[in-house]
Image (cartoon, rainbow, N blue to C red; front, side, top):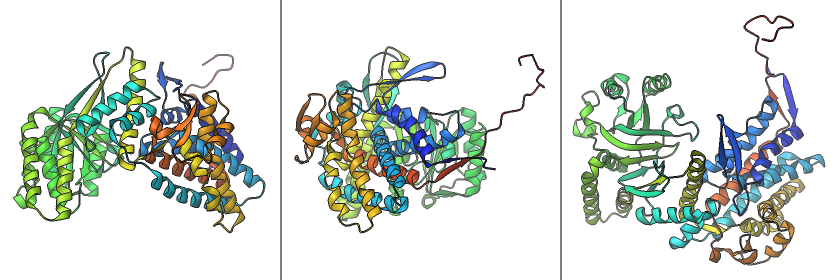
Length: 536
């Protein structure tokens, strides 16, 4: 039964608690937040970590905070960076939107105008994006994302140079204070876990296995009996088991999940990657990478007859909601190279454009390998901080290589704000026009905040950047107005896009939410009756 209710303005007041904590890390110098966790201290420079760490004792306040945490979490999941920017944009949209509602604006129509404006701005953003060119662009993107840490920027650039754009970067702790790069065989697959209940690292919402056994089949697992011997063997060896299968019945999935959650099994299932005929080739690549037998019905190999000797092995496996990264065991290196040569031969013999593209993608994935960044530091606190920065830098770099780059320092959002009046003219509803104005105002907030944290007046910066060429903006590190693309002050287009889209999504939810209803927290009854005058 819902016994407490809070209205829209109280929701906004709660949102500010989360938003203001993130403001302090939106700056060119990379200021930090110290987080007290499990009796220790952790230095944080990462917006999503700060937002997720906030848990308020009041149930109503916590419900409001969760709304804002969503914008950070979603941006981090889709782009890997830009969480603080998304939160800053959301705050300004909510602030201006609530003011408009107080003066009589219809929140539903206003939200419609906000959504349509952002859709048009995203089109402009994609058109203005510049492709990443060379090592200098990669280093610049990584450095800025890591809080202007040039060492991390150089580290990521070197790793990309070794593995190429189709390679994978994994981050591990080093046993020494030194940070180094190792390149190993491996690949990334565009399929994630079939159930989030397989997650064994809740902080990152991922599955992590080391020295795992791997089952690869193009058959559907309809009954648990088909794989019981393999599950028992993995349990006896105390090793995790990763299953790649065409499909798996609901009953089998539920059984595996229940046994995993009870601590009986260390297991995860990933559905076959690829489409139609391409599936078999990718599964064969996975089998070769891990040294597993490919249990294909076409080859007469059944699940019932499979033995533990037909399982493969992987040194490390990381599974997210939409991808699986496999670091190969050293014992399979020769087989991987032979597999690459075979696919290259198949590529040379085909004239089919579609098949050629798929074969080329498979070659790139297998050839790129995995760069293992062994991160070192003098203290555990420094290590965790550095790993978080490297994770942000890695994500931002791959985002930039995928969708290109745009001017950083908030300049891109200032230039986008100049497009809002044109978009607004196409709206007939006055409340939709107000929605467009709200977006235009919010777009100026990141640049103003960066300028303020650098000791400069934000309004002055905005006025000087407005009307300039798209590439121009304010460089907070030098205090100059210059070509930001040329000077390396850049952001991945995907990060800016996701920050804007997720900010307007959450802002729309808050503005069209009249109230939050929550269950009233009941004080637990004491196990022993309380005696007046005696402290329990």
